[in-house]
Image (cartoon, protein in one colour):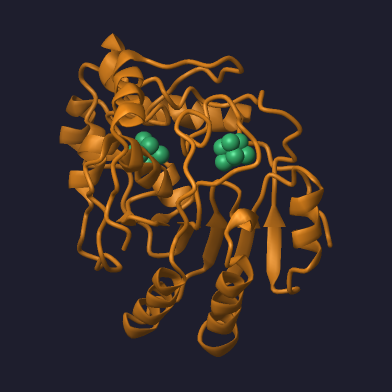
Length: 275
Ligand code: SF4
Ligand code: SF4
């Protein structure tokens, strides 16, 4: 197994970009210049499961706050490949994530579907597995990966990490009073479209928000290029701590809207439509 260099989520240049995107998403700026970000047709992230062997504070898929054993059916990955071929979308990069993706019970079947897609249709695509690289079980699985799969990891060693405060909902903050949530954030372009067990989202983070709030807004099929997905951004970005700028934290931060959503969901688990 060729280990990658540890990836850093938080850097000074990214914080500067976050600050700029906060300014750029103010309604009066958007009226002048339009929206900064648009759904990606280059990159896609697939959240194959919300199972995880770590319980990080402020996890942006809520694996700690609302643990789940949901897995994406294999047929969803197969349908994604089929639709990509039919729509002639040549992804530049496909990331496989979770949760911890290696915990999916059919992990190697998913890998096979994606490597077949690379071999037969899109040899230039970069297939990247994002893993926490935590624990012997995960490491043993990674040793069996085919060479086409590249690794990305922040090499987590504990549940305490420097993260953006994902659970501080912008709607709970005064400084976002004039923000246009339909602007999204740079994750849309940097990370790409999200495919989750409940469908396609403007980013995979939005799918993780939907599983807590239960709007069930995942698109059933690959969104066409003229789908702005602004309806999703208006809702999910108003709840997402990645929107605009926020100081990274190591301690758990949860604003009232999220607190209520988690409490509601713990009492009444919902089933989003598994696509
Ligand atoms: S390893 Fe990743 S998915 Fe798992 S709890 Fe930590 S942040 Fe969430
Ligand atoms: S849901 Fe969060 S991560 Fe996704 S575009 Fe909106 S602010 Fe960015």
